Length: 528
Image 1: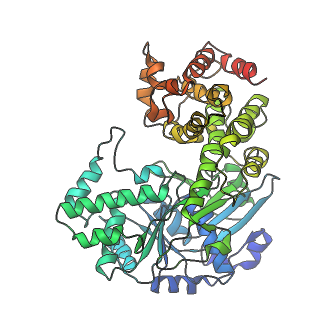
Image 2: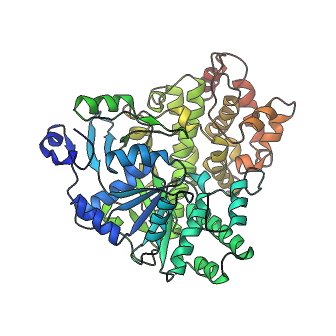
């Protein structure tokens, strides 16, 4: 069986293999999308293909939508060339259930894949033509938090951004400049309203996106490339909205066991590819079943009926509360703790860690005992039930090939939100004692111990990429380096000495660093 439009015609073969086919007319959908596009998505990777595109497929199957999504890739153009074009923009979605069952269905809601490369005149013209269409309702993003950043760790504008600001809107390179340039095309074509929606897993994502796009546009105004009227239109959220959102679905890299099963069923050409930008991607996507998407309902030109596909459409305050619940209490802190300790203890699967008594106890304490007292309750989701699902179903899912090494990437960027917000809440509540915390300081100390690049056997261990890695490792070698780090509010969200927690973190760190076996000894000692 071939994963392409021609191959879908062999309905009986797909059904025999237990793979569900899309119900909508593919050619009609693509024709309607070309004539009246409604949705462009930037970031053509797995979370988009396996979650967001699947939402639109659900609407198409139910007859609640007629057009598909146009996928635009701003970073790794090989994804379009090697994964989209050879398979006619189709994705084979494999849901990995905790029971071991694999649910397989074809996602066919992506009408077109485009390389958002302004140096490629043909591809760029495709995007320009789409953005001037009055029918376009929304553009969305899954480009990771780094995709919105205009500045480096020193707070200075990155060279590519400086170049974009100086060169103007004709040949933008950075994703935010690309966005500003295409919105300029829309403004010049009649200034039809539009929603610009970040669906990335980061705090206040809509605000980050808006600020970066506006900063680029302001530079173009100041440099004489565009009129002030464009900036005024872009600043008016009744015309160009930037809704906030919260997204949650674990979508790990393609698993070999899934690839082999698909091949055994007769599906051809399922092998993953590794692009020149080190993207590991396959014609299929494997992911867990639980998924959540909460979006601020602010769409000035209309929107798809996303609530009919299971999306929570609500107000900004509720989105913010849901995001805080997940990121600061109920999931992300647990993930980070498992990641750093899992690496040191030799684990290669998150699920296996949940069979470790000490690590399971660690995340339960972080979530239930230390997190829930300060959790932000969004009302649309129950925080305790959310943790129950995380601890009882999601993290222990043995069929989800997620690794602590992947989760440990960029931890320095995650610590201030995943743990810092809880620490701030404890410090602000007179009825809570921050010094009573045990699991959270263990997680923080564990991360610092992890940075040594030595596992609990005393052997060299790879440390995942992190923009602060070299600086932190160098600091830890200095006599007072640990104190310097613990007093850095940019790293932890608070100065741990002022918060009253530094002494405990420092004590745990030294115990964890005592030698081979010390990590396990410390966990047993404090989690008994």
